[in-house]
Length: 232
Image (cartoon, rainbow, N blue to C red; front, side, top):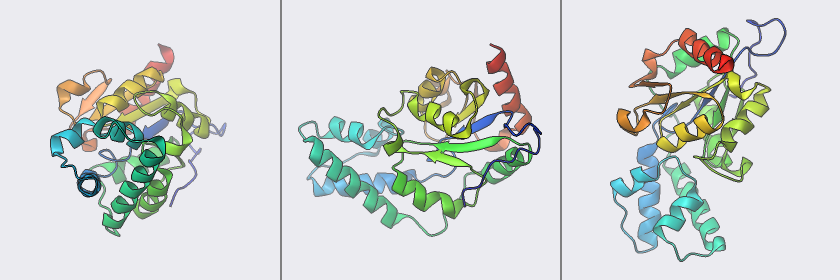
């Protein structure tokens, strides 16, 4: 269930800082389901898809991906195929979606500390509405693909999420796993932690902190990153 942010740590009622989570590759690893959905869709279109091609587009919007792979499609056909891919993806999802290591502990500790939390993802809203209730995390809001006009690496998705939480961008920390997501966080003027779920460490070097697992991260580290960004 999506929950409201706690403000116990800040009697003024405004969260001291916020954490903006990417979804796939950060909270959960659904990449295998996305790959299989894209593979089946491309097979319907008479095209094979390699895992390398899929990985190169991870974190980007469906319309951008389809234009890269099938450049002659009309906008209407892109919309239709995008919806078809996501329908396949939702059919493939298990009822219980396992969280990545460290997610439950960190989200709960952030909630106890009074930090606001939102998901800011290139994922379509229909997917978020299926996935998030199954996770049971204290996340106050979400921004999905339909809520923005430009996808990552443009910073719009993170700026919208900060606005939803009523937290200034400089008080936000983004947790991402993609190169496009790190670039978007930097463009939004936010601190960024990158997790090496999808991309190797060297490709994520523009983040303020790169970790192999969220088990390495503490609330105090995230708070410190937000405070440092605000002072900068």
